[in-house]
Length: 280
Image 1 (tube, rainbow, N blue to C red):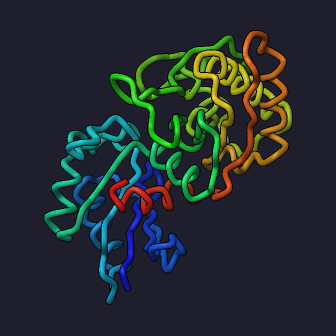
Image 2 (image 1 turned 120 degrees about the vertical axis):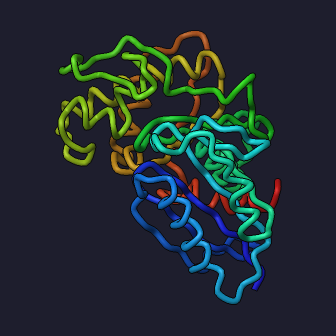
């Protein structure tokens, strides 16, 4: 069978799945992310091999954390310290002799969510909140890029936090939104994972995210914001409703965007990686 393979290369886990031409999932594999670079690359090859079987691979796509060089496929994911200036495109294409495409995980997820989910909005923003926080902004279904990939998680806000001394972003700046609402940020601030937060702590996270969305909505004016990632999906509709309320209460001059959870749940970046494997 002709298949596309998607890779979701995360800071805590690696996922891979193969899809038919209509993006029906056929098989997937999942492993913890190794610390070492060589172990990580070898594991990616192993996962692709497990999916290959008797299938003909038409293309491989990957979603990974930034920063990266999209054209040359050179990656340096922030949450994987040993992966610096890695020529991932050359490595995968040399091994498997098929086209390989890679982009920032939020761009990949945005493309998968939008095109496979059948959205029609002209101005569309996908935000993931998981280990870190990032976004992919689409205009007419295509990724909007500035001089480099916009990092919406690295803005600053007027935040509320019961333990501000624990705020510390991995980018090196102390007061980024990512450091307050992401999975890693939540662990640092509250000393526990997001799923163990009490109502007051969830309310702080929702308030802070709402302030960030106020900035985003005011500057980018998207019609729709879709949320994915473990923190967003884990918090569910109750969390999203609080975020929406805080955002709307602080917007005056622009129309507040609609907000909803991803239709692909935890798998948006993975299916998006298969989508970009077509070379779109």
